[in-house]
Length: 268
Ligand code: HPA
Image (cartoon, rainbow, N blue to C red):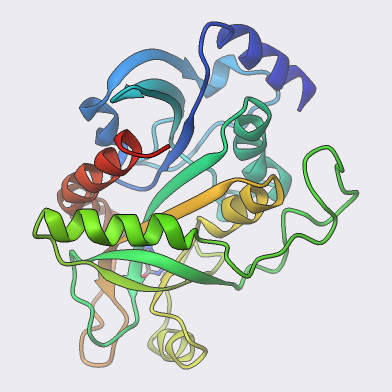
């Protein structure tokens, strides 16, 4: 992490970064609604993996939203790409070391709550980690955070409340729910969707959780929101493709983007 941190610290010597924002599948266009100050391709950063997934760009964008400057991770890393959990955590840990203390995350997910519809926005209230591992396994970096971090309020109740009130003021109805994280890359079988619902999930996806664990370890306040791109509910299960997911995410992403921009702009 030292080489990538030194590189970014030099590059950002003129800015104070107030927030981090991780953009999920099909949601990359959000950067166009911000005032872009700088762009850094992952390939330029020492020690950095390159994102391999279509719909994920592979760059950090420094943007100004209102009076706040932050780092947008445009293109995330996933466990199914064959990366180590510490590589998924690296961008988040770098943000933490660069002074970011508030992290916003988005992604595309399958809905398993019977009340959800394709195109819904779900504000994440909690998660279930179904990955076979955890980014904090291994020696603990005490400078970053504690050995046994608390996860009782992984998703900031303050930011959830704020999102709900902004959505209401925009006349957008949103869902709130529990996100479960699986490895992928295949989508779920009907029996697996049923199982996820039974264990308390409202939605399922292949990201966010490793990043939130790393962020909470480093003491960052987290906010997560998903776009429901397909349904894993009885009678609603259809063939899913990554292209479908990207299409729905891009459409609904515009509304989610407006909520996020307002949240970031007015937050402190
Ligand atoms: N399952 C897992 N990940 C996903 C899904 C899904 O149905 N939709 C979008 N990402």
